[in-house]
Image 1 (cartoon, helix red, strand yellow):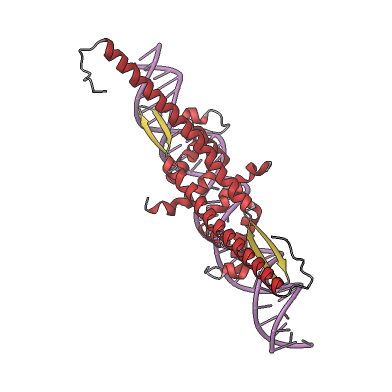
Image 2: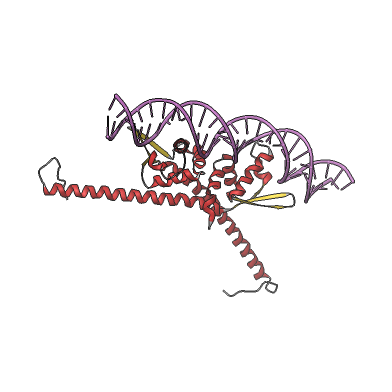
Length: 128
Length: 128
DNA sequence: TAATTGGTTAGCCATGAAGCTAACTATACA
DNA sequence: TGTATAGTTAGCTTCATGGCTAACCAATTA
């Protein structure tokens, strides 16, 4: 929970590659061995392993070797941490929109009050 | 709405840099000129402009030049598009957890039924 | 018109990322 | 014991990224 902000760099960098996003998507459906994960990709194994490693150091994936098979699983915390970042931004963004809306409303109200005080002008009075 | 998936690469890559995330955060609070944005950063302007450019080509930021001032604003669509990706993954992930839970429940039920049929064994009966 | 301000273009450098092959380790199977 | 399987390590290339300086427009302002 503490310094997970500092690896937003790594999490987003990891997710910026389509191969790695595909791996994450695959792992959302359940754990898998390196070989199973590599299957669909037309890529040499060492290259593929680099992607796995990037995902691991970002914290998105954890793996464990048993016998000669390495099994990978998703670490949901990291995904959630990244999702949180978006929600924080959206909160700020929406707060601004609210303020802006409030401001527009205030302007509108003032304009209406001004129009009420000076009834004959280009402004047309609207019922209610 | 159509091919926004294809620039998830660029969006995530853009967000993998702390300078650029800070710019996005700043722009969530409202539009700003390049100079205003650059202020807090100890970086030469051309370097900073590269970040702006990365953000623009990713679609996260739009800008417009009026006179000699370029004003930048956030393009919320791209942010939302990226956030959506997380939500999709989470949906898959949670569906799996649900299935897993259902499976565990099923096992538990079967075990209970087996225990009921064969009352004296290592299983301890629990009230209700 | 001259000087300032705000941004832009061009080009350089160092580092890191993404791919490859070749060779190696270690487990499982026959 | 020998062979196939599953990863791993080492080392190489190529290209992108992030930073810099220097020089260059183009609007404002004095």
